[in-house]
Length: 442
Image (cartoon, rainbow, N blue to C red):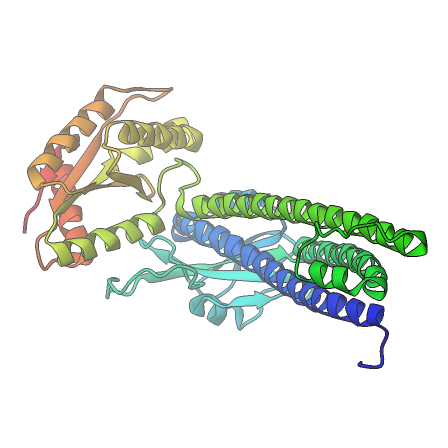
C-alpha cells in the first residue's frame, strides 16, 4: 500500500469503512426485520387459534355443528386464513371451512403441546385443544401466565385447527430485504461519491502546497494562503484557495446530509414504536368489548399480588356475571347478546377510577381490579356499578341486571385463593336471587 499513489490511499481509507459498515448494517436490519415479520404472523395465528378454541367450547360440548360451522366460517375471513377445522376429542372432523380438510394423527399431540405445525404448501397450522369450562390458554407459550394455575384437569372436548398462509409474509420479507438492499446500495454510492470528491479536493492541494494541506488535514477547512507570489506560483496559490473553499462547502453539505439522515431514522423509529404499540394493544384487548382480555387481567392480577406481598398494600376484585344471559341469546339472538356485553363494558369502564382495571374474564363474566382499595370501598363501588347496570335501558332487550362477587387480598393469599372466594361470593349472589353484591372474606 505504501507504493500506491496518494489519491489511491485516500480512496481506500475512505471507502473501506463505509462499505463494511453499510454491508453489516444492511444485513442486520434485514435479518431483524424478517424475524419480526415471522414472529408477528405466529403471534397473530396463536391469538386467533386461542379465541377460536374458546368460542368453540359451547358448540363442541352441545354437539351443535351449526354454531361450529359459523365460527369456522367467521374465522376463515381472517387475513391469510386458508382453512379452519374443528374435531372431537378423538380427532374426528366435526366441521371444516376452507382447504384444511385432512388432519394428521400427530396434530392432536401438537395441539396439546402448543406446537406450530408447518403445512405442506407455504403455511402454518395452529392447533389448540377445546376444554370444557376452561377458557382458552396460551398453548403457544407467547405470554408468561405465572405459576398459579388450577390443579384440576379440564375435560377435553376436541381440537381446533387454523391454517394460515405464509405467502404474504414471504412476500413482505422479500420486499423488506430488497428495500434494505437498495438503501444499502444507495448509501454506498453516495458515500463513494463523497469519498471520490474528497480525494480529488485533497490530493491536488497536497501535491502543490504541503503547508496548506497539513492545515486542512487537521480539520481547518477554512484554511487560506496568501496569493501574492505572482506568476504561475500565484495561480497555484489562488487555485488552492478555491479548492479549500470547495472542501469547506462539501463538509457543510455532508453535515446537512447527516442531519437529514438522523431525522429520517428518528421518524422510522417512531413509526416502528407506534406499530409495536398497536400490536401490544391487540394482544391485550378483548375483541368484542374493547376492554382488557383475560390474559391482560391475569398479568395485572399477578402485578398487584406481587406488590401487595412486597409492600403490604391491598387490592380488591369484583367478579361480575350478567344475569340470565343465555335467555338474551335465545330470545333476541347472539348479536343482541354481544351488544349487551359491549354496553355493560362501557358502563363498567365509565364508572370506575382511572387507576382501576376492568376486562372481560370470559363469556358473560367481567372482572374489576380495584388497586389500593379496601373491601369496604370495593363494595361501595360495586354497588354503584350494579345500580348503573340495572337502570340502563339496553337496546332491544330492555333492562338487565348483573350479580357481583367481591373479595379482597389477605396476606398470604394466592391468586387462586382470591379468585375462588370471588367465585363463591358470585355463586352466593346468584342463589340470593341475582342482581345483588355479595362479599366473601374467608
